[in-house]
Length: 394
Image (cartoon, rainbow, N blue to C red):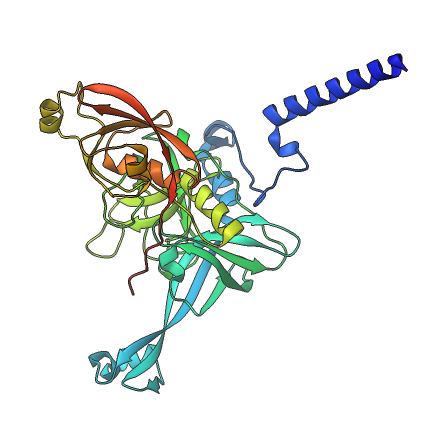
């Protein structure tokens, strides 16, 4: 009997050791691990393909483009817009041509408007798949159609949207979908070659090339949470929601914004990093919306003048201007005048970074805030609350 117990104990020990190693190294192998979506990811570094020999050798990104194009779709949406009676557009022949036969509704008339954008197939199963696009592409849409490069058209429904990051997830039912491979936007560097894939102006699927011009762009006043990849790859109206890929065809960003006074590309486009988009997408698929952390503070950038006045070694961090009474920061003991330098070991460079890190924290968990108070460094544990959703401005 004792021998049997010894054998049993050894078996249990070995089994637990195997489970521990698998969980540590390959957690995705665990059968009990809950996957929101199965995402194809790549760890391959970028490279340029040379084709031919002798005098016919050429360099090309054809394979990268081909790999990405099959996963990028056109998103066509239509919405009803109320125009008050007597609105000048109602008398415009060109407007009436594209938006005919309005329906009367009290003191207003309904006109159907259409919009074009792009989207990226991010996952697929036996019944259909999910498409990632911009919120502004499908905002208020009553009908959404997905068009493929091979001519297929499928209806889509909105799973959920996140106006604060300008992202939306659509669901399409059908077979033959090819999801894109996710790259690593956090490893992108200024100067990396990138391709932008989308359907600009509705002319058809188009690929443009450029480089990563800058990283971490914010304060553009476009979204509440901004961490854009800037690129000079031509991005035009209709490219919104399309893919920004590396030279292996791996997704590193969702094209979202152009800087232009004419409405066309001027070589300044912005894409949402896939590292940010992935987290938003998974929350939307799992819960239908995005939940963000909240502590109740009003942060301010540290200027050189403030750093000198507060006797800080460097002009870096986020100064707490105010603390909302009764909220998590107040309950934890954070005070106006504290300078946040790190949250859960993540360095805080300015107020934008502070709000972004706090928003990414899971409500109900605790986070360690490293602050400077009266020239002394201290750590304060803060229980993260849930940020209330803001109503979308119509």
